[in-house]
Length: 212
Image 1 (cartoon, helix red, strand yellow):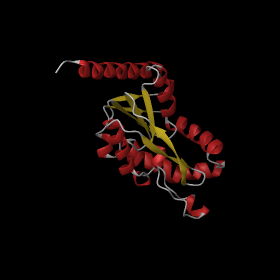
Image 2: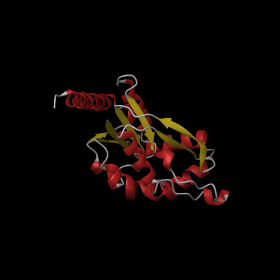
Image 3: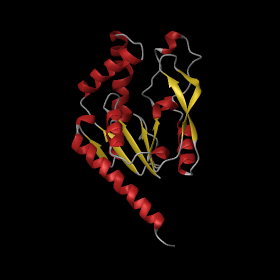
Image 4: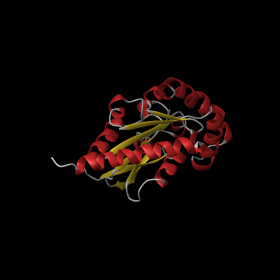
């Protein structure tokens, strides 16, 4: 199994990159894990307290569970990935079954900030984008998917997203093997990453087929 980490700031285009890579991989070869599924349950907080949750700080992620799940997938075991709601700030009772595949992509803003998790990735990709472009995408996403108005989005960006990006996410770029500028619109860079993943898959298959 090849485990690929795809990180980058909020609104950088990570999901677009993942989708474009998936289109170029053999059908049925890919499993996807989202860091967002592993946010800690905060359902016990009041509505006002939920507005102050810092989703961009590493402490918001249950990294031990994510690491445990990656270990199980690498050993060929299926997992039940949590389902997280930004609206209720809670984990659902439902889960998503994820079966082990030849390629596993882990996507999230904070995945390169944790040393143990970072060490599990065979290829590390950082999706880079201009701050203005990221803010526009964040505003569109948060208003459409997370029930926030413009003022809430801007306040949250200034208080949490921007400072956490500068403190944790941007510095984690130095761990990347490949940096994709211009986000998912950089088709050439995405094609190069997909080609490298396919080559890695072939290398793994060849080594497993070699006689002992």
